[in-house]
Image (tube, rainbow, N blue to C red):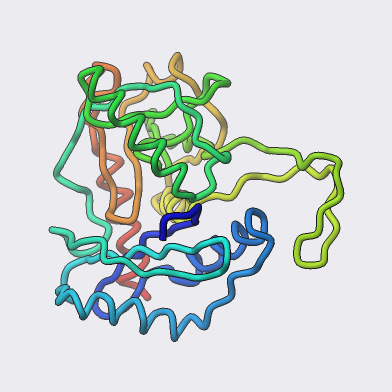
Length: 264
């Protein structure tokens, strides 16, 4: 599959695919808006196919493993093995890289596309040239977007600030047909990733204050921690633009996220 496509990376553990319904719902919304078609797979059948891919790779069932789901504009899908974790579940990863702020708006306003993924790789290369390991992406409006293409959280005291992955966008006043619905001149909120929703839920469950307002580099200098949640788990930065950071709240969030699944 070399054409433009949407993607999600799925987290497998103990013979189940986590949050598959949320991933499918996100792909459905994005496919409707970008491809003009719905995505409505049979979830049980999709889960079986995903688990079959993992079994063919002889992935262990007692460690987290990953399978990537790619959805093309014509509605065809591809499942690709995406590796094995050292961890069991959404743990706080022991790797604590250094981050560098890079001016780079995610293409297509944060939609989970192959283009956004390529842009995140390019931003990482820029960060490496600046002496860091990961890119903390900052949009053209001067506010943070993502880190490594994943939702970015910054902690000040007991307040966790989540950076918006995209900005509201308007549909041009030219009539379109999306699944039989006429759209003209409407303003839409960009889609939020599955991990963004999971992170926001964990912040609330942990009894912390959640702030979902844009913030920029000037405010970042007052933050105690910076971390992100992706399909692998939680990763906390050791430094952001040279400033040392902690990982106390990040560990608490990782524990809370994993507890959602242990209670299920």
